[in-house]
Image 1 (cartoon, rainbow, N blue to C red):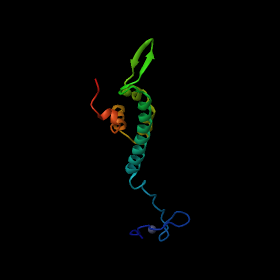
Image 2: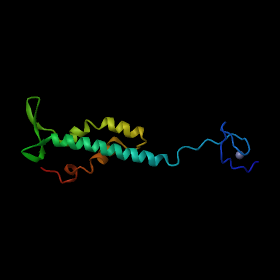
Image 3: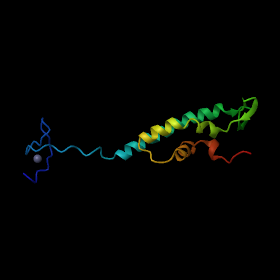
Image 4: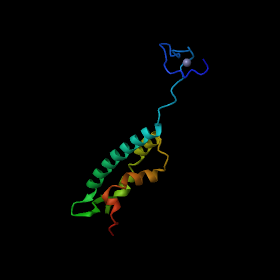
Length: 124
Ligand SMILES: [Zn+2]
């Protein structure tokens, strides 16, 4: 019975042919791939959120610039990236839980890289 491949478990989770304990399946076949799929979904969701934030932060009179806002008695334009930076944390933690191994900075780049505002040359 040593050569038994233990193909079919019985009701007690022993091999149907030889009665040896049925071997536990060794993890899911490609766990990393599953994570990558989830990580990509997370990137898409975060990117969607940031796109909306950027839209809200855009100056309606000059779409190339962030909108003017009053901060501490001064009119300032908060760069889109600064706003995204302050909100990237929770998605980065989720990404880490999904097995993402990069830095938060790299995570930020991945989220932002398909947003047109960040791929076009900076407006001075
Ligand atoms: Zn067996």
